[in-house]
Amino acid sequence: MSAPRPGIEAQREQILSTTLELLGKHGPEDLTPQIIAEAAGVSRATFYRAFTGVEAIVDTLHRRYAERVASRLEEALQSRDEPWLEAIVGRVMDDAAAERGLIIAMFREEVRPGSAALAVRDARVERQVAQIARWWRERTGLREDKAIIRSFIILLQGVGLHVALHPALSAAERRRLRSAMMLMISSTMEEYTRRQ
Image (tube, rainbow, N blue to C red):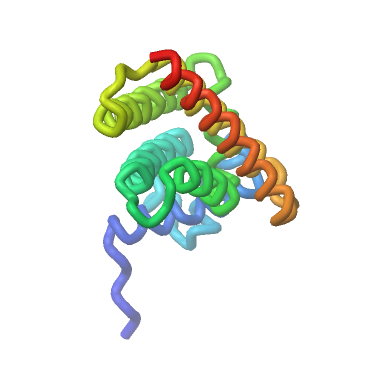
């Protein structure tokens, strides 16, 4: 007797993890339901029971990433073991290195006119701005400048994309990049605080 087939949720997760792997090697435009189904070890019918198409998978991966980023940002802001800025920059760089295919695919989708990924990115940025603004008010008692916070987040996204695009960065290069980011952000925040 053969082993029972996994349920649709297990198959969905298999399709998602397989797509994430494939995105590390190919852009979303190169993926088809057939390619993903074969790589995931499921039939095309199972693929279509789980997702309406490749774009739906990429959208699901984007949304999960946005949730994970928000959660990791909250952890970094609440951490007592690690300075908040070091934690945030480190997590961005670590996530980009670990999920480079998704980061690159997200960027490609975000710059495509009419892409749903742009709305996901905008919502992710605004959520991060709100998280940091709340933390800033609670920590300093000062009024936050959301334009500065937004520029930090966009700058961090650029660093994440750089790390994703250059997987051969040495540990020393990553440390220098991390240090430069932290210096730029902390200097700007110190100057802003001084002027309040």
